[in-house]
Amino acid sequence: MDNYLLLLLGSSTDEFYAADSWPIEGTYTAAKSNGKAAGGPPLNMGCVCAANGGNVKGLDYLSDNDESSKFIISVLNKYGIDTTNIQYGTATNQKVVIINTGNKRTMFVVLPERPFYTVDDKLQELLNNAKYIYSMMHYVKSSFENIEPLLEAKKHGTKIIFDACCEFDKDWEFDILYSLADGVFINKQDYTNLKNNSEKDPKEILFEKGCEFICVTDGENGTTCYTKDNQYKAEACLTNVVDSTGAGDSFAGTFIYSLQKGYDYQKALRLASVSGSLACTGLGGQTACHSEKELYEFAEKHNYKID
Image: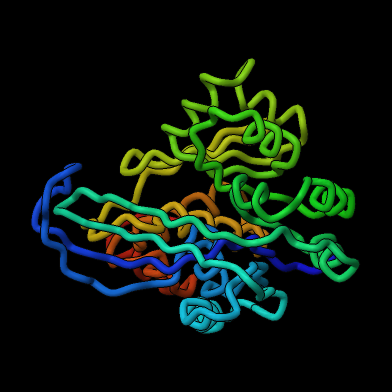
């Protein structure tokens, strides 16, 4: 097994707009373009992890006839993510339109269309040799005909970590999460949905099945990391918020980088909290793509203690 993080990407092109007023169904509002960025939670997370110095590889299926594919690859390469395993063919890429009005935000997601991966020996080896695989449950569902390749990877010691952003109103969401998760990042509202729709406390279910950690984020109220035997807390590193897009992804990227470095959960949690706050200081999900040294400098500037 190699010490690399494998991203199941689900990449998108994010287009940012500033609107005069909050858009309401059936009404008109003017919007001005604020640029674009490559996006998607695993992509944002991976860029942050790689920028810190983590070993990151990407797996995706992109259109072979779309300028957005070239743009996405250029961003991944910029941050040092290995893109040699990304596949191309007849597909439509995902696009997200993000409209900001003051401190409010609306996101319109244009979903991609693509085939399942063909799991040959090469792809299975890529899964088996990863130290971590990171994705979202719906990317797993749209990428593989079944979860057997991921279960096989777990037999080889690969740890599967999810951004568990879901309504948790479909059976397959629970099946994938509870069958595969070795680590979970989830915000407080989604965790409440998960808890309300589970037979018992989700932490109890996950830890019984071998999950190693669950990070529940709560914005400016900070984050709690649960393990089977302990609980860790970190307050938020408060700063002026320009755009919160990618804050959770930045948190996750720095947290996984910290685990790759061998840091304990408390240090990983606090360093990740700094990264999540830094992500809010600019547009797009790669605002916090900085070195660990720069994260320490940002923390010191904001009187936030990491160690």
